[in-house]
Image (cartoon, rainbow, N blue to C red):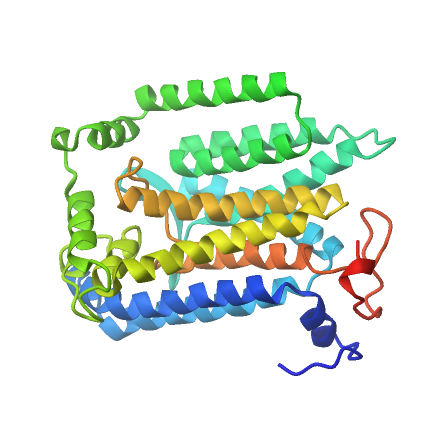
Length: 390
């Protein structure tokens, strides 16, 4: 893209203010998503009896294309625009997530999906990024000088509502991710160390309670600690795939794990990548996720707007934690959890929700000319060197 620095069009201003390195890393991850769908989708489509193997692949191609377009479109927004989008999106996602308890489709004992033509929608995926931004806005408003808004208290009430709905589905993994993000935002906002310890203790108590309250959680923990205590077929096969792949892999299309692994295209796509392309590609994927998170946090270090700092921290924590949970489960480093690898695994709701979150992150971390805290820069103002930017 060739834009002059004097170009004051929407795209021109966007190109010279957006973090192009992070955008590039995210687009590379989307590219890996295309590669892994080519590798895993034909075998999976045949095994599950999909009417058309090509349609199975084409659907994910369409999802990834929409994700790239959505991410870029959202990154065009101003800080105020991100807040408005998050507020509206959170209200809609919360209502749809609550609706799953009544009209949701039950799969493997959980009601997390709404039956929508051409898409099995999981609204809780969209709840994650929107809630992170809304919580950041409320906490920042509560800490503003002279503010009479009980922002932190309202955010806590919303969190409890979200937690109650997710517990009802149940989706304990999603609840843990949202809780971790919410806690990270409070920590960055300057939570008292005594409260940090108290919240940490509550988190441990909640994890222990989940172990005794939910049989599927107990089963996964037991199988992690003792694989012989239950069905650990998928993890065992995934570990074999890593061993078979070696350093450079068996070669494109030569993998065998995708023919026998039920979730080869989704939760265990990392194992397919390891077998066909080897440890080298796996390290590249890990490096891309680490780069996005670390670079994002480094950009936030120089941010003076508390809302931007908290929202960015929440979105990055969510992105990095989801990647860690997926890859850690595949490598048997943590108990298994049905969570996708961002942009790489199959799934419409997950891909679009992650694109929404990363689009908001790119919008929030765009360079902005100096303004008062909480206000947006003049959209007609040209980009200035980094030394003159807040």
